[in-house]
Amino acid sequence: LFTDASIEFRLNGSYLSRVAFPNGKLTGSFPSIKFMPGDTVSVDAYLGDDKLTGATTVVPTVVPIEKVDTVRVLRKQTDGRYLFVMKTTVRFTDMPNKADFYQLQLFHHTTSQSGASVTDTIDYLKEDRVFYDPEVGVSSFESIDFQGLFPDEVINGTSYGLVIYLPVAYFQKNDANVQNRLVYRLYHVDELYYGFLRARIIALSNQDLPVFNDVKMPSNVLNGYGVVTSLSPHDYEI
Image: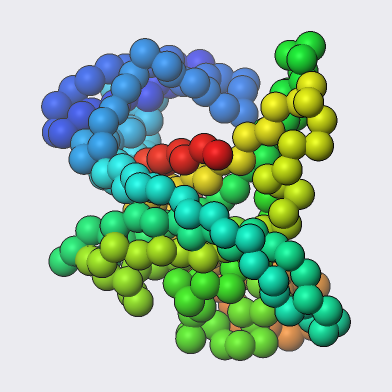
């Protein structure tokens, strides 16, 4: 436990702020320190005047969801039955001439007349081609959920419609006293975040197997181990 430690933030190479290390806490929040997409941010830890550790990240630009198209379709299920589902197409434009990485997550919000609200994360099937990774293999791909992470390898620099099938119930107003909102959130993440989260998911999925290959976890922390990284989200609400 440090008693004379601090955290220094630098923005685009210039000093921004220094705050006391959150001693005795698991996390620290500094809402007055703000960054913008495209900024280069350095986070360094000091003990007195001695730098102990630090890392740098570049905040990704926001990649907006331009629209979400919906159409009700009949789709064959694994048991052979046909069922009405909602085909939703998430449209966005990938930036050209560079490798980009994303994470798409879905949330279902319900709010009652009394103001009570509940938010659920939707665990959707990752069937779109952007989610397929030939390096992982088919058997592993089917068993590991990478939480909506995907690179831009197959869509680089193009406008793309990512298809997700959802139960029709999410789009029906069953109770006049309850407000339903469906939120599609597209994170534009940096390569370090993408690699770290994928490696962590693979490691956790393999931990109960008797034999598996070691997973190399990326790190960008000076004199330490871990990641300092960034992401930029954009929400589209139905």
